[in-house]
Length: 253
Length: 253
DNA sequence: AATATCGTCTGATATAATCGGACAGTTTAA
DNA sequence: TTAAACTGTCCGATTATATCAGACGATATT
Image (cartoon, rainbow over all chains, first blue to last red; front, side, top):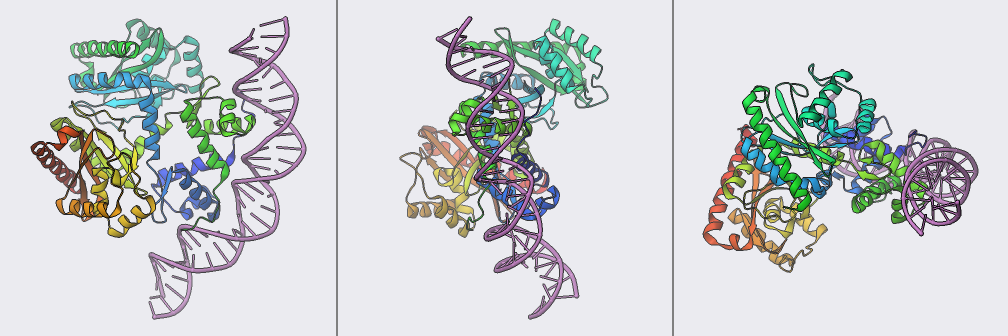
């Protein structure tokens, strides 16, 4: 619980180097050295070491992040049994609705978009697989927050707070809690303009044997999502998808 | 060129810990310690440090790789301008052909699948975004190898050799070179059963302003790819896709 | 209830990260 | 063309820090 053991500074710095390389999109020892305020020789050893790991490549004196990150990330995703069960069903849902579909899980108190599928009229809003957001900032995350064990929900709210992403993001804890109550009762969550202006979301949880595994979201332009009859259609299709994911997860079909 | 500066052992070990965590899919300090042959307390400090970086999460005493890898990998992919230009075109190609489409680039002398798109009758052969393979083992890689600057091609063949993946993989350098010559002349590459038994591939290079940027591949069952007329159709669609990628890359449409 | 095994933490020790400086190669300016 | 100012890579002395044995309470197992 407490944090008495100090982390290894060399390892932390190695990851700082990775961050710098991402930010500048490739650099040599000198540039890394000035950005991190360390001697040039030190920066060089880090870069040399990271190249050895395969996560950095040296491309004519210029060091860049390699695609090893993509490989490792993809393998993590493809090994996930929820993803395996969900992928084809999400694809169908994207084809049928034409909207942007997301599969979301909770990790370390945050929302992670494990997978996204796009339809023919999907929004393109910088949503990407692996994207991390606060759970309280959108309907899919709230569908998770509402169905986690209560003590876990409390813990997450306490440690992460309610940071606003737009002026519509819920920041009042009391309001969030009543919202979560109705989400739990209704079985789904809807909101718009809370994470990204102009984007509306419908989210519903995936529960298997009473355990929450994640949530599926449908994202569309706020205007479309606000339309009552269209929203009802989407909710029904969403629930159908979740049901078939659940069946496939349990029985493999 | 030589490797006189020794890499930092602590950083290398940190990445070894990540590898172990991947292999066992989550473990505590004790298990990591025995697998790496280090004291338990040492393993603990590494895990604690990696947790701090965000690439590892502690989930009830069990440490796992986090989805930060997926986030970083995706961001690298989405920032790539070739990917940005190619994605919608590859999607169309997948819809039209129904086959598995791959976008491949060269990195550190190897083939990296930057992106894949699946159609309604695509093979499912463990191909994933970020996957790294030898360049000589398949048509898409050979399309790259054939169109790289000659000295680069030589360098790659020399440093990486011609490791076989199946009994059909080309391992004779002379044969590979004559094959590369005809690929360069024809403008495309075809083979089957060389990387994975039962899979056939058509690959063609993406060249922009005389510079090789990568290659696009169409993968299907060996039987389908061997059919002359079908293969011709695929080649034409492939070339059309590459042309529109080129245009979009240069002029943004 | 007793024993084994777990994750976490402390403190002494010796290893390994650090940093100034040297060097050759390349780009920039004069 | 020359000179100056860069660059990336490497060496060696120093000292900060990764390492390791062992202790601790908490869980799991027997």
